Length: 239
Image (cartoon, rainbow, N blue to C red; front, side, top):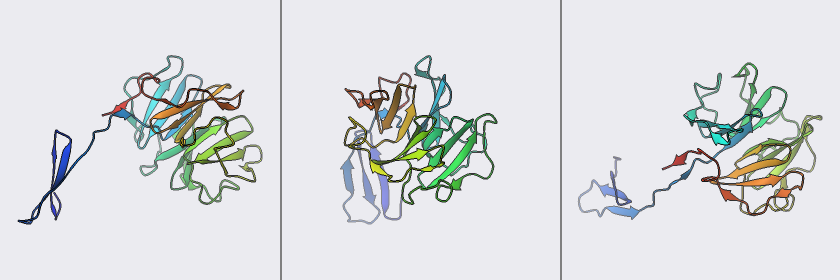
């Protein structure tokens, strides 16, 4: 109920606003209920056995050897990840390979997670700008993946940048458009999560689809993107 009327819904996929003022015609519309998979907004491979996928304020745990989501997920991040700020929604994550995972949010902040202590380091989150050398001021990360010991890639919508880990800075000349630089990349595929699964394969997610990138061949595998549903065992469905 609002000051202008009552909101009403039916089980025939119809809804509308009934005016509180006599003589005014109610406004009605039809809508379609959406059913589909939970859409990952960040992903990180935690170990050889475990990967985590995040969606807004929830996460799920993927058992890599069993090739399926663990039962009982998704769970809320808050209360499960020690020291996690209540207002921090992850939009990118990357395992740095030194016992540290970095998480990023779309409001250009990041936090540092100590994997051994199993908690967020104190003093975080911090602003990306001024802490990550060479980072563009308007580049809000939507996906991240450590490609090798020397290189990590960060994505934002249809662009990406290359981070030199040894030099601890963004390589000059970035960001660049994904299209034309990542062979076989679909033009309308904006990555919202990325994870390097092995030395040979990386997965990228966008909305309810994903693609498989062949690292050795340096290109997207043919036949992708595919729907997440039906391909990732146990993946939760939004009704």
